[in-house]
Image 1 (cartoon, rainbow, N blue to C red):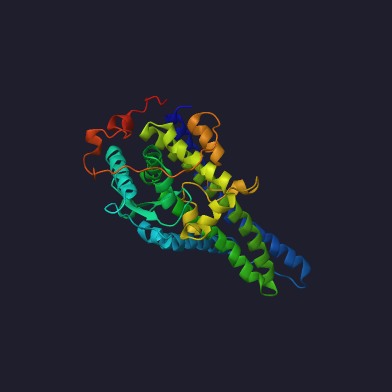
Image 2 (cartoon, rainbow, N blue to C red):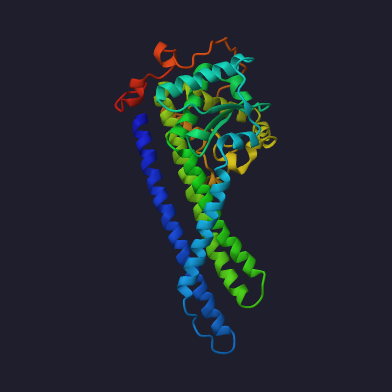
Length: 366
């Protein structure tokens, strides 16, 4: 499949999943009302006396459910809108220092080249020090507070072509608005979780509240789990989209493909060490994990439905069109580079995408 077709397929699947997410919210509200009606009928049948059906029951149930869901979404997204740089700093990232590091100057040049070629605003660039694992993430509510952060391991073990592929993947997330979309979905899932928490709180009381709390908690758990699964499915599609766009932008399968294969090599050689390297830093924060280039560790068959990333093997197969073996991650020699900001696209730096390659939807990729 051409990478242009892969991008369109991922966008189409995202739209379908987002529609499913909206339907899930509506069904949750209906489920809460239905569960409360059943709880009321059971309670009326068990308890002595005549309990009349309360007036305005439907309106109250729908109103409270929507208030919890939308209120939770607003609170959580407000917290996440603090800014990409602040989030990266919480994850342990620091400012780029190109003047004292050849590797960081190379990273700065690559970001400049790709941003010029993609005609997009340059994000803040940061480095997560003392992390040997190869990884990166992009964050930010909009272009003004966008940031791309890479680990020190990525600078040490990736050649220029591979680092281009990694940066192109992260810039694609910013270009497509994925970081904002993921934050909004995280806020909506938090709102769904509030419905469950509200029911759990009511359940701690006795009498009428226990019946209602149990019903709300049951419906809330089903809604929260469905929301988590849909959010993860959307995230996986955006990863496929970013992978395909990275190959399109760089015109190289071995760029991003090499990155993914080297991560496979790191996991093969030090399976516990790769995950442990993340847990000792802010990269383990829930608000950061779903934005990483590669998730910290894969789960089992059941857990994969909640994974925000496809498996490495699947992503590599999509990039190359066939399965590929892992690559050993060894330190690379970084040649000194001069700052090229502002003229990279014009001079044609090797491996840099041209403007024509970005706007030609019928280009073929080898």
